[in-house]
Image (cartoon, rainbow, N blue to C red):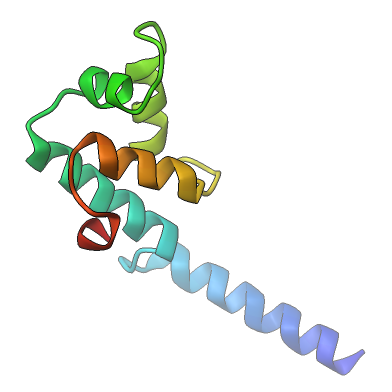
Length: 95
C-alpha cells in the first residue's frame, strides 16, 4: 500500500511539474519537429497530405491533426514515415 501511495504522489508531482513547465513531452517534441520540417519543406498541408496518400478532401485535415500540438493521440510510425517520405526527408533527420 505504501508504494501505491508513494507512486501516486510522485505521479501527481510530475503532472503538476509538467503543467507548469516549459519542457515538452516526447510526443510534443516530435510534433514540434514535424511542424518545423513541414514549414521548411515549403509545401502546404494539402500538398503534404496528398503526397502521404490522403484524398484531396481530407489531406489538409489529416496533416493538421498530425501537426496539432494539442493532439491526444500518439502518431503511428507508419504515419511518421509517410510524412517524411512526402516531404522528401529521412525520418531520422526530422526527429
